[in-house]
Amino acid sequence: MVNIGLTKVDDALAAKHPGLGRYAACQSKAFMMGTGSFILGTAGLFAIQKVLQKRLPYPLQWNLLISTVASSVGSYAVTRWETQKCTDLWVLLETGKVPDRSPPQVPKPEESTGTGNTKYGDVME
Image 1 (cartoon, helix red, strand yellow):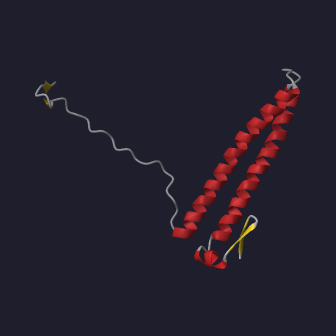
Image 2 (image 1 turned 90 degrees about the vertical axis):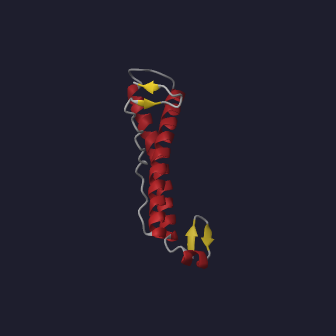
Image 3 (image 1 turned 60 degrees about the vertical axis):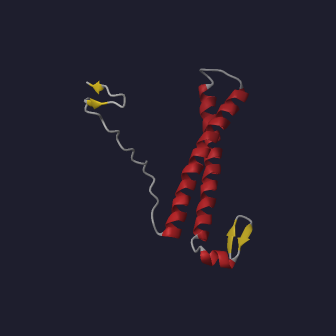
């Protein structure tokens, strides 16, 4: 039986998807890394701002707000990055192929030579 969070997955489903346990562990790690980066980011930014407050005084609530908002953005980025790696792991475990994350190639538009007829019958120069 595979546990995902507080729920248990049926054995038949776990047998159908043998990588489910590894994927669930990866997702759990990603969420814990996001939580940890939020806590450490908030504490670190708060400490840095406390040191800088001697030169640029501003109220404590702004210090807390800036620390919380900035670490929330950082935490989101860390969680998204780690979750993307878990998604790639899931695709690899299910299909045996590594997903292609490269941007699609855009074909170059054909360049005209400057001569010829237009649809109106005029000659382009």
